[in-house]
Image 1 (tube, rainbow over the protein chains, first blue to last red):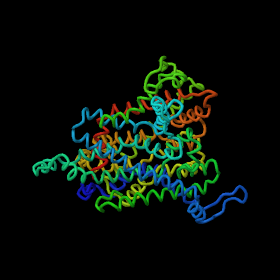
Image 2 (cartoon, chains in turn orange, purple):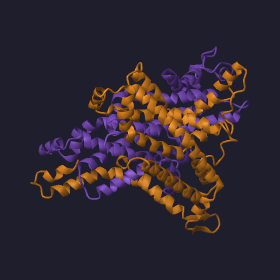
Image 3 (cartoon, one colour):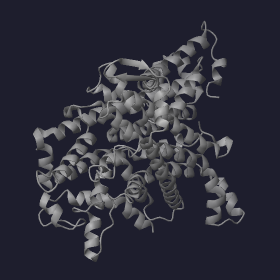
Length: 306
Length: 272
């Protein structure tokens, strides 16, 4: 629709539509250039690398899908994938429900100082993941950590957040803390976009606040919720910074294959296996896209974003 | 309930602010959510800025350059491209768009290692370009600007400007850009957060501490602090105060530009 007008433009010029087409492409070209350099080229390069194997002696040989077959039975890679899957099954719903709750609360105008509240919830998003993890590490910690001090005051043993069982929930808490505000903002923006007549109509029909949320607000939020879910799923599969920083505190628990991304990193930089690492990166990207697609397929067709 | 929630989001930041006023010993000896006897903030700030020849200042400036050039460039390219796609018809436009939208789903972190491999093959590793070039491409920014331009820039206005004899670039600058401003600020801010907070990519493509951004530098200090443990030089107070200084600029930018980015999100992110 946005371009429908080009057929009706002034006709004095020789080839207005062709010239117009060139102009449009020239506007797009700079973006295209960095897009190819920063995204398409690395992707293709990773694909190519993943089909070869480099040896110190004997050079580089084409090995076809060998690297992928190796990954398919690599217990460390599979364990890492399982870990992020477990992480995402619990973390994403909790985070999105919290974000939904906050967005609805602010939208209902029953919150004191809604602007301050909105900002307070959003602020952690502006904090680098490195810093966020450092802070929570101190709060969890045994050395001069808050948890330790509070447990001390009550004369009980503090929970061991750096142990095998609590590490994943501890990481989930950090990610949740960071991203509730961002998701809340997307949902809140969608709520503000609901036309007011819908509320008026609902009120005429005698709907209370709860009914309005259920029948008007939630259906209108579905596309935004879908977008937020997809981005969260992508984020979970890519988990790297939080566990990497946490590894300083819990080196025994956060192994070199704790998440697939950490594993790929270790292989490339400490294992000298760049081709295998490239194959893992490709697999990880494919897995992410597949899961994101499944999320979309489970919702109504008309709401698909991509 | 809501107050409890707010406390949850602000507690770690309060902890950070309080504990940046403590000396190394104060950290260990006082309660985490209250001040120690001595007020050590200014000494801490001075120590952060001077530790190992003032490397922190260097990291800070690096981060500013990466963020301003990377995010500013990304927002500008997204605005130009989104406007071009929304307001002009050219062959292959749909195909290009499909490619870009597909890339929205390609996780940036999955690209980090391939990006390193590619950059090292063209000898750009360990230079600022290794951080800046990947930051310039924001498929999501393009998507946002495309939707925004389609909705916010009326064709009639462009036609009127053309009839007045204005060139296309001039029309973009003085007519379209004004209408695109809220969308532009939104893309700029989100890319700014992305670049300022990015850790994985710079960690991989940089080896020389002189090029580090704050995130990689602070992580290194943290590693040192924990490795030193009880003995050695534990620099926990530097990590804490350095972290506080690293988050202030972004929060300030968000506060100053609040009105714009909120309007931009309301229009761009969800409506279609």
